[in-house]
Length: 341
Image (cartoon, rainbow, N blue to C red; front, side, top):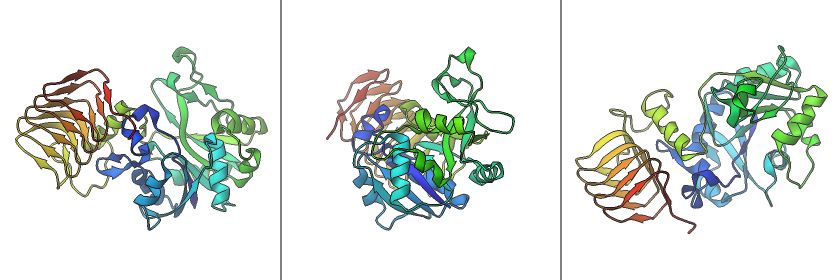
């Protein structure tokens, strides 16, 4: 089975971290997000994938010179200009010569979806396209997908008021498609799979959906990025780790940590943590330095950033790569520091 992985977006909600790296290359407990996405696909028989690239494509290509990610052979399709989701699917699939049933995955969604079950359902229904759905408590932030009892999709309802949503099952960002779907997508223009392609398939009666309550998380915001780490540290999502979690913290073996207080902390390679530092529910990316007496809560520190002595960072601060926060600074409430290189 082959797959198209959509990784072309700019990741604007995760800036300034994504000024230097595509969000799918940001680590989730020491492993790039892309590798965690492909690892689940590999478990379900995906052997080849084409990465649909747009933003900072060279970062992906340089990271995987042997064209292997999590045991999956990868190729690259670099969009000449932004084509939106459906346009990107068409471009990448044709570039890779895909002419059989294939998988499409949003590259910023972490999930343990049973892809094998999704493929079997797709084939049983004789569907042209099948969408994985996921139930959420509040569907008002998403597009919801009501279905008939047999799974045939009735409609797409974009971000309905919570008390008016026809269902709480949302588009989970994994699809099984037949090559015929590509013929419905115009070439060389921006086309949305959610707003244009799928509604057209609803009219044809060939779009189906299957709900699955496996682990699922859209990692596109700082809060969700922190949640992805907590889920692993608290064993809500067990994953293989080269360095094990200890006391609900993960510290890379190359990091230097003095007498610090850690709680739900992720400290990546080559970080240096001074004495009397407190780090809670936070992620430090490779090479970050935290000086004596600093406090970091609910925040993300970018690669090579420096936090000065006695500084306090709380409530979802995001510090970009290479940024220095002066000693004694107090940053609270979704402060973001750092810009493009």
